Length: 632
Ligand code: C2E
Ligand code: CA
Ligand code: CA
Image (cartoon, rainbow, N blue to C red):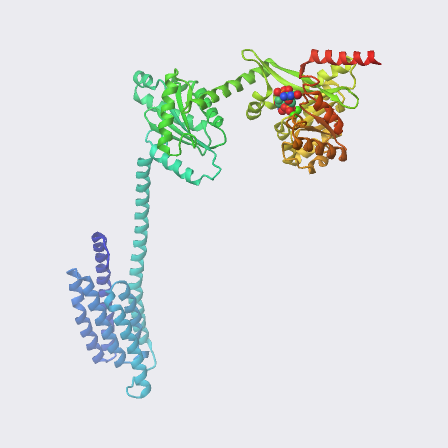
């Protein structure tokens, strides 16, 4: 044995000793039977030889007993080898039964004997066979070959039995050893798991501890792609856990912490990590978020859920919590730095009166809270209908009169006054509230347009801005159809303004929606044309009716040759494609004249009118009608 563990070496040695003894007795028994057989057959010389062989092997027994297993095996196997080689030479040479013993000796030597004798024995057996064959061939030696009979059969059976016995014993040993090894490996693995659990997991809650959280964070940090999304580290500290522990005892306190742990896990996605930092502190890693608002939403969810009581052993327990947040890469990339910053932010949240969350960065903090406030205000605004539409006239340049208006939303905030759309549309889109707001706009605009018709302005159309999200969520055809039916507005008096970006994401849902609406009679215009992709292929594909030239071009039309050229090109192209054009943001008479001279269909801008409340818009078109009449 070359290796290593003395205890294992000893076990193997003892086992080998036991086996050697068993094989020794089996061989002795076989020799005795062979001796009796030889005496019976009157083959006395072989009987003596076998008796001598039997006697000569006895030191094996004593050597084994005294623990010298290696030596005993080597002695035993070498002696048997020479003994059987002698028998073979004196018997039938290569055809002698003794030859059968040699392979068994080799197997046994490999498994139990010293490695030092394996090769010499093998070589001995081979040369012996070769020599015997050669000498017989060359006529230098002669082995008589007799016809085999029952006696040879008995001998063969004996040899096979002893060999089988030895090999069976050894194979059994090997199997037992393998099983023992497997069992041992499993035991080692499970104790390794146990140790890992003790080292990496919190005993009370079963959550990962900080060390493991760091490993998770670092692992996912290295995996992150170049255009990394944001990761948030959230430090959650219960506000009045000590009171629970002090008044109801540690046992209840522990159970409460366990429930908090699973509550926190329910608040996050399966691949976010919630870990127990210690005591009543938890750390959450929220990975792969697109916007910091995603993390503040989680914080809000936790604050909300913890505000409800949790039942522990019949006690209704509630504790609020204070949450601090830091972000990778904004506040750092290293776990410990982020954790420290989240911790500081958590203390800030406590200082603000607890039961709230704070970002490490003050600026982010203000924005986040403003956003959250805005989203919740927006929700209220929908319920309380705080929105109004203003209408900006669209002026037909060849007819020289107003032919419709674009509906533009405003929010009459009870505290902050009138809020323009660019301050809340994006938030409404992100929070999904744009669906409801968009529907309200459509309904309101259609009803107003019907009222214009009723007031005698039958040709007026209304244009509404529709967010790409309203298309992407699907079902817009149904909404439009219902509103048109409900308001009784002819479909061709409704125009939908959308941005180029929407058409670029050419999906089947979108194509179906546009086709269905087109079939109803609704028209489409591309808003802010020229600022986006200006992939002209879609204009005809989607049956667009009007291009609204972005105000950034219109406003510089008389100052910059470039802008002038762009507007001219857009108008020319539109004429060729049989599309109408609206120049947006026309503020001066010069701009109005230029676009008219270029062949633009319509104009819209402060030059004619700012967006107006409905009554003012009605007064404007009435006044226009009156001047027309008086001039006729
Ligand atoms: P938009 O669709 O390009 O609307 C034109 C914007 O330009 C309006 O701003 C309008 O007041 C302003 N404008 C019109 N003429 C002139 C001009 O001569 N000079 C200048 N400087 N500005 C002019 P507003 O009302 O603040 O709307 C801003 C944007 O908010 C709109 O841009 C539109 O994208 C969005 N929006 C407005 N209402 C809605 C709505 O109901 N739904 C959706 N999804 N978006 C809306
Ligand atoms: Ca528009
Ligand atoms: Ca526009």
